Image 1 (tube, rainbow, N blue to C red):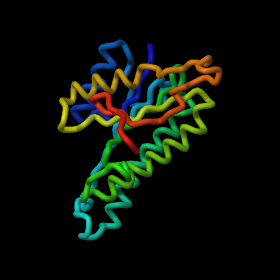
Image 2 (cartoon, rainbow, N blue to C red):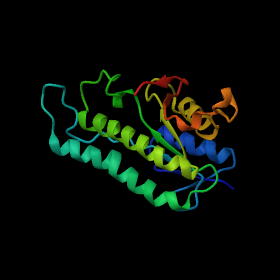
Image 3 (cartoon, rainbow, N blue to C red):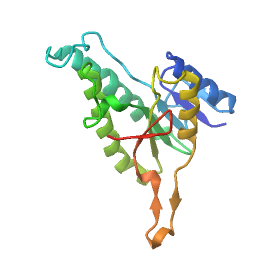
Image 4 (cartoon, one colour):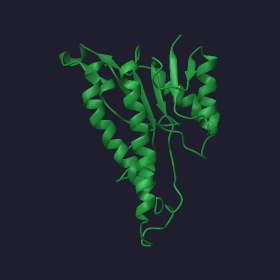
Length: 193
């Protein structure tokens, strides 16, 4: 039985996602070191004090706490999970347009948004090293508040478990979409970084 680690089931989206995996016969585990096939991190922390508008100043302590919660803690869990991952060895993280330096229109939540942008870069660099070891990556935006948690979970599960296009013979050059790291949302759209 394939094992799926989901970092938390506190949100409605995460609960629905865990239930869908279980319904499909996967074992959802709470320990990232349990020989898992899928590592799914649903961390998205907005810390107190990180809600000022642009121009009102940045709460440095809140920004540091947002970085710890949204980057350091998930990366610590991932580093503990990597040695025991098997099968698909798929690494999945939540992210959204607010973490895109070029796309975001947010004027609040600097610490949260910049910590998520940092996570984007860290995952790109991690992907470059881990692809050769058989790991694959997915980034997903559940569109909180725009679609139902169940609709988002169904889209996430489909995106997480499906392999992407690989063709060794394409134009004689080969093509492997698993080498591309993109953010896809609950409506199937690719989001710009």
